Image 1 (spheres, rainbow, N blue to C red):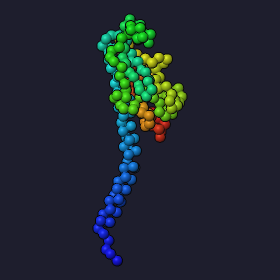
Image 2: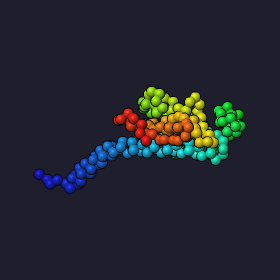
Image 3: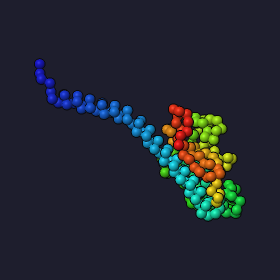
Image 4: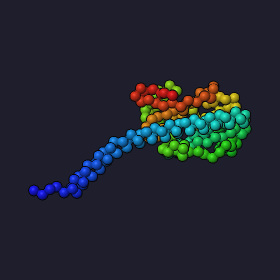
Length: 196
């Protein structure tokens, strides 16, 4: 019986190592992808809160109302700041007529956190206490307008903005009306509760 060829053993070893590498990669890829979605969603929620804080500071600095306008364009969330131009607060009709002027160009949330937008990506209890929001519900909960305003005294329109990637954790940016204070909350699916 001829002796085994050393090349045959090497090929079997290479195939075994390759199969093991593929198996390990296949099991770790979803974990890495999930962690990346979590980090992007976290970054998107905090970036949105920072944009709101900027609007609040602009209102205090200018001594006039400043509002953040939100628009959802497909998978994109567009954010833009406007200042009151005629003393009656920032209004959609005044923006459309060029009375309330932008403080900068429109900014897309996805530019700062890829794949993250204003969206509800899973059933969650409404932070404001009005029941359950289903997947795909309106993520902008600031009354009947797409504007969130800050006054020169520091108060704001109360409401909640829901932020998430298509999958992964759901975040909410909550704005308190009388104080203008903002909180970023994360939904803990296992507990069914919002956590800071």
